[in-house]
Length: 228
Image 1 (cartoon, helix red, strand yellow):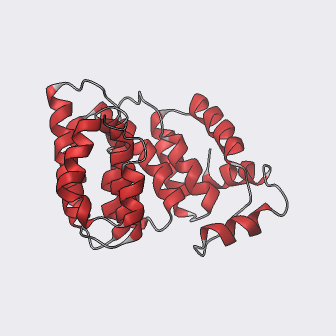
Image 2 (image 1 turned 60 degrees about the vertical axis):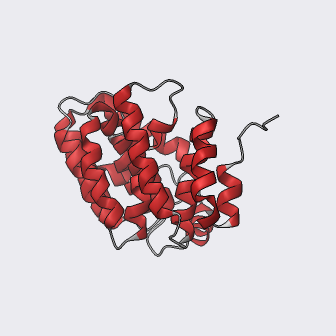
């Protein structure tokens, strides 16, 4: 399947009048077709069942390069799967997208694909750490979003606990960054972690919360159980 054929398939799913609202909402200048997310899910699920890993990676690359909003979402969804073998080309492609991030919706979909590849090979967190030093707040934010799976364990194994602490170290440096998206990414990470390790989030907030914006503090502590 070529990117042109895939775009033609996407165009059959357009809902008239939807694109204008999407463009106004996302506020990033690019082409919006006006396709609901569930429709893209169904189409890319079908493609994943039909295409080899190499063909999926090639198609995802081509769709991403169009810079069409829904095409970029479809590119990410093509690679969002726990088991992809081999997966080096998928991981390499996802990494190559990071410097292009300029929209939270596209970035989050790409990071969801990246989360699966990190879980498949946690050593890749070493590569993600370099993103925390980027000049782009989108790249710095991606380091938090792509590591969200490490917030979701009640009793992490030692290796997973070490990654959790590593990311919390990044977060401790991020709290002094006044960028809204960076503050939000820290709050999101802490909010999700609080459901599984409330004490660790309380300790983080006791040490670093004073540097966070009020909205980020509220978000981070949103699900913390009240202490007696």
